[in-house]
Image 1: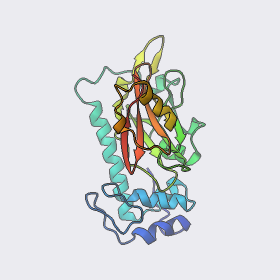
Image 2: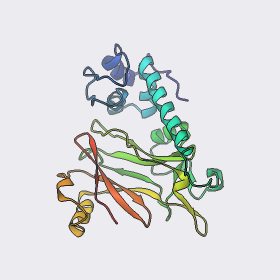
Image 3: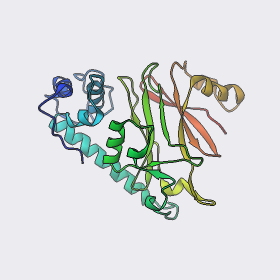
Length: 259
């Protein structure tokens, strides 16, 4: 578990304290006093982003949150974990598959993934995340300009307690809400000559997304396509199809992809 041990010192702490030391946390209210706050999102997101922009590492910035906000952050993470566990108990969940330890060709420790920065890898490892490789060996880490031109963001598929989700680490102030893209691993694994994982992500440049609209005009509604000035994220089911997720004006749009 991350410990809140840097609350009283350091450059990154100062960024957080000035913005939030007198704020009472309630996720159903707005926080107009926090610079960059987007209504309806957790209040710690812009504080962590501002801290990282000032030069802090992500874990250090989380640890630098004021105590009440840090506790709310932990409670939110625990609630997300509970949702993942509940999802695994839903009726109709496919039969159990081998545990990750028996599938080393699929599941990697974040610390062993070359495409992840040390800060992000440590945070994911601390949460119990494993990064699954898709069929074909892709690492399922995608780095691109997902929220704004010139801002590098990192998306990664993370599997915790047998449930996979997409996590995004924003590289600056521009961002969209956390993605609600979650699935039991049992629905994403299949056994051929060996077990394979068929969920994947990839950076989708604007011209890549437009190709789908140009080649499938009857299936892709042109009015859904915004003016695109940065990358999207392709959400792929290997050999089945895909859709493109695009962060536009603070909200995710689901755009046309491959059949």
